[in-house]
Amino acid sequence: QSVLTQPPSVSAAPGQKVTISCSGSSSNIGNNYVSWYQQLPGTAPKLLIYDNNKRPSGIPGRFSGSKSGTSATLGITGLQTGDEADYYCGTWDSSLSAVVFGGGTKLTVL
Amino acid sequence: EVQLVQSGAEVKKPGESLKISCKGSGYSFSNYWIGWVRQMPGKGLEWMGIIYPGDSDTRYSPSFQGQVTISADKSISTAYLQWSSLQASDSAIYHCARYRQVTTLRYFDYWGQGTLVTVSS
Image (cartoon, rainbow over all chains, first blue to last red):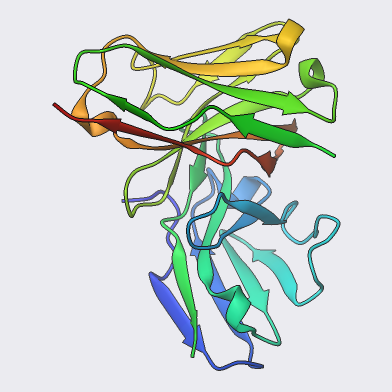
């Protein structure tokens, strides 16, 4: 089991909006910044969001991040078929002294 | 342009040793942490550890401490992940990534393409 909990899968139609949740505890999300990664099929992960809600250069504004308490959320609007991928949240866990990731969420754009 | 280029796929037998590499370019390699992340077949991401090439300060995940060795040669901008005795359970894709950390802000901003390691008799 992963330290951070994500839903295994989410789906939505093209053009719609989807949110992916990431639940943790005070030792990780509650007191550390969250990042999100996109892994397209057969490729390496790519940074989507850091510092809870900041986008690296080149990441479209359709992707957004937020955090409240011990949970974080990734939002994707205007879904495209090219967004089909696995999405992971990550943060530092102060109790484990380790970077921890969620188990990943597979996004299907129907 | 920041790039991390990893060594190619490996097929090994149980008990053999292995060292895979990750070469950075487009930035000051010595001044940024490099991390290693394991991804077992069809599974999620697992953090293995990080190294600061400037002084070789190395931190391991408790789950991987003693199982692998992380090293770096700043003169050739390359980080390494090595095993002394592979097991079938080490079969996975291994990703290197540049690791940013400032107090509680920590994330991987650039990733290598991954190295597939297959251990089979």
